[in-house]
Amino acid sequence: EVQLQASGGGLVQPGGSLRLSCAASGFTFIDYAIGWFRQAPGKEREGVSCISNGGGSTYYVDSVKGRFTISRDNAKNTVYLQMNSLKPEDTAVYYCAAAVMCGKLDINYFEVWGQGTLVTVSS
Image: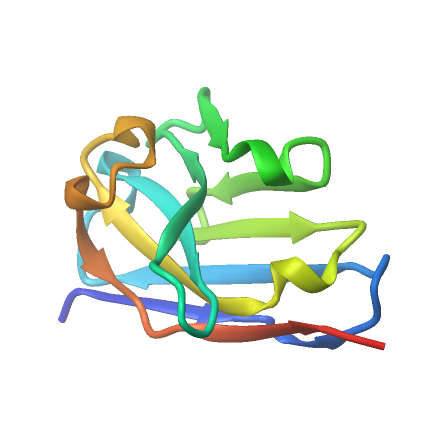
């Protein structure tokens, strides 16, 4: 069964950090780029970051550049999103998804989706 499992969300104060994980199974992980998306209440799902299949290329939406870092461990079939200096506007359900290429975080490229993990940034 093709599956992506996101984890690591939680409640954190503004300025704090969290690391999200996305564990993959059921497909050849190294053949796929992995993206992180988020959806806040009442808003559309937006692309946050993506990493190419080999890890050599990464992409970030402007609002998280310099604060978030995406990485992958192909031996563990896992992608990570390190989130630092979190802001209340980062509050959302975060999803990971797989695609043949990052495609500038175009949601239409992403074929396989995991369930979300909730990140809440609040004092």
